[in-house]
Image 1 (cartoon, rainbow, N blue to C red):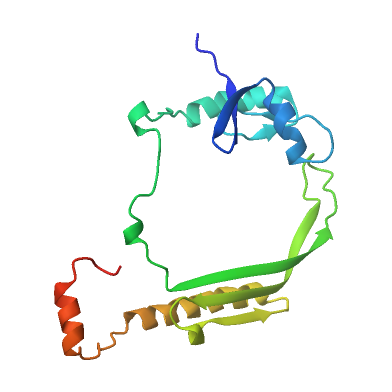
Image 2 (cartoon, rainbow, N blue to C red):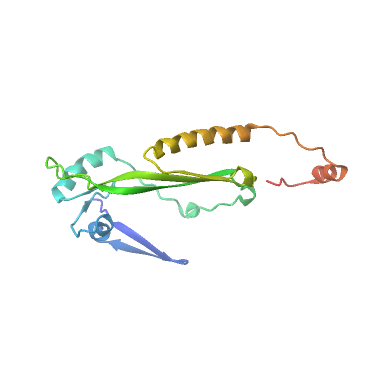
Length: 192
């Protein structure tokens, strides 16, 4: 019989330690809700339930649906590191976005034991486009109204089209001077 255990890896600076998780529910339940009710977690998919009976019923299906093998790296392959720092290049455009919501209380549905307590209503969206090579292409825009989500989706479509147009445009290169040609022909490493 195979024995299944959960481990927690704790590290500080370069020192790491594995700890045995005796009770996954006790460790994680307080992060799910502030009511101190116990949750029962499925070890395979991390869904949680309010009773052990519901977890047992779920486990039967979960074992059939989520049949996967965990393959750990070998000792030679256990560290992953980025090595090609010379191939790094800044992305030309970055979009930072944020939205603000109000929480509206929802009425309880007597038909079910689960219901939505609150509903997020979006009332404001703003975004900032940052161009890494031309500050005049950077901009901030926002909107505050009930249709701001549709506006934001349309703005992203328009922005994607504009960025594609900008990046697809071929700009002719300026003629090299004699010194620039010599530097270019004698170069051994790409600037990228």
